[in-house]
Each structure stands twice: as C-alpha cells, then as structure tokens.
Image 1 (cartoon, rainbow, N blue to C red):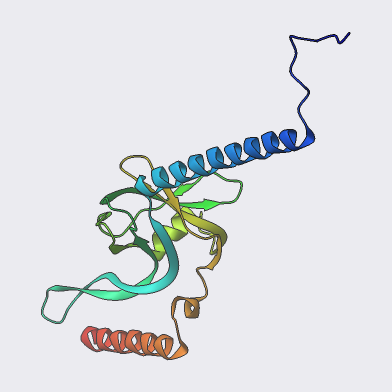
Image 2 (cartoon, rainbow, N blue to C red):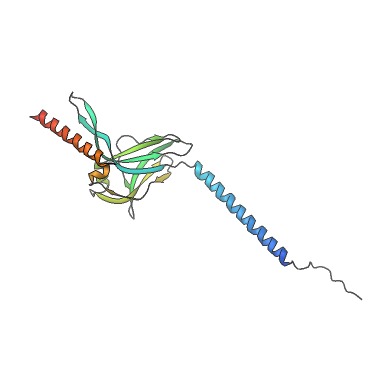
Length: 196
C-alpha cells in the first residue's frame, strides 16, 4: 500500500534558487540605474555655473585724460569667467574666496555682478586692492572662488595658488608683461611732463 503526502511543495532546485537571485540582482540594478538617471536629470535642471579664475589685466583703473575727461586704464586684477551650461539665466549675487579651513571671504567686484544668459559666459573682475583687503593684506593664498546666485545655489572653481605680488604672473606671456611695463612708463613720463 502506498502513502500519499499532501500539503507541501517540493523544495526549490538549485537552478530555481540561482534564477531568483539573478532576478533580484537585476531588479536592484535597474532601480539603482533609474534613481541615478533621475538624479542626473534634476542636477541638469538646477542652475549652476562653471567658475574659472585667473590673475589678469583689465581696464578698471579710472584716470584723467589729456582733455579733462576720464578714461579707464589697465590694472592688475582677478578675472573670474562664469560659464552657464544650463537652460536658465543665472543672476550672480555674491562672490567669495575660500581658504581651506577658514570662513569664506567676500570679494568686492569692480562694477555690477552679471546675469549670465543660458549657454553664455561673462566675467567678474576683482581689483587687486580688493583682493589684498580680503586676504588681510597678504599677497599669497591658496583657495578657490565660490559664486552664489539669487536662488542660493553655489558654484565653485578649482583650488589654486595665487601670488598677488608676482606681477609677471598676471600675464599670459613675457611680451605682454613688457608691453604693460612700457605703457606704464610712458604714462608716468607724460604725467611728469605735465607737472613740470
């Protein structure tokens, strides 16, 4: 006589266990990929700027010209190029220099802070004297530029060494440096002739 056992399923085979584990791993991977894709989409919609800072020379110094009017003359400064890769215009509200381990130092720009149009670039100029004030009259610093927009979003540049006393470091080539020195010498000679 044969007994029949009821009420239980046979134990899963090793093939079924492997199949369930593979299905589970693929499901988790798909969920992770979908989450990452959503994060990238949201990040692309969030306004942000590409921040590129370097020492340079720009016409920011106000001088009296030969006719009693005023003109701008080249002077040493920090040139911060802001690029907007997003679909929205970004209004810059504040610019800081961040030294490692210290509170950000607010920088006073020359002129008004810009509104960077979508897929465009603009510059913020920080005069050398304003940098010196922010650095507490120190000429050397290592840090990065941080830019805030009107919505409170923060964009940062690269961490770099800056030597404000090295005048040659403001120029891309020695020729441009020598041209700047010649221009300054010519201006000084002209002023001395006027005074005598």
